[in-house]
Amino acid sequence: MGQKGSSGLFRAVSAFGVVGFVRFLEGYYIVLITKRRKMADIGGHAIYKIEDTNMIYIPNDSVRITHPDEARYLRIFQNVDLSSNFYFSYSYDLSHSLQYNLTVLQMPLEMLKSETTQTRQESFDIFEDEGLITQGGSG
Image (cartoon, rainbow, N blue to C red; front, side, top):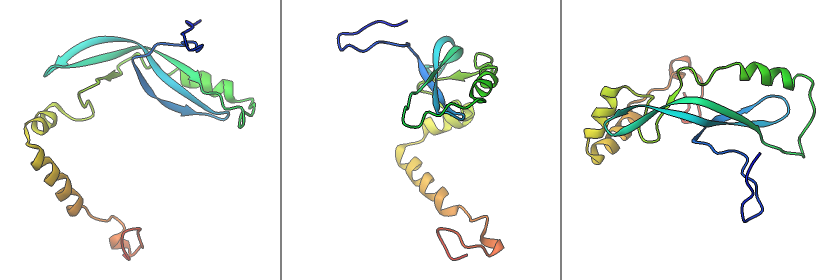
């Protein structure tokens, strides 16, 4: 399955990125991007489409309990097609609009720092009107 390195370790898989971690009943799995295709460039930032993923169980023998529903949950999760319309970039924030990203890229660093501080100061507590006590205040 893998190649043995000089350290005695085996390479189980090569990956382009981590989609995330998922836990069902028996433990954690890591979901890796194993195949990608470059789809576009935005301002010099490469945008990739996920073509294939691999899910690997992360062994933890101290908490490994065999559960009869684990295989069923695993099959259900693997039916989610991550190669269908899932994109990523190593250097470009795809969670914001192009307009926002261009605005942020053009702002001097000092303005970004003050904007972040100002946003925090202008935030409000949704529980304030309810008379509930929150961590930061006495409501």
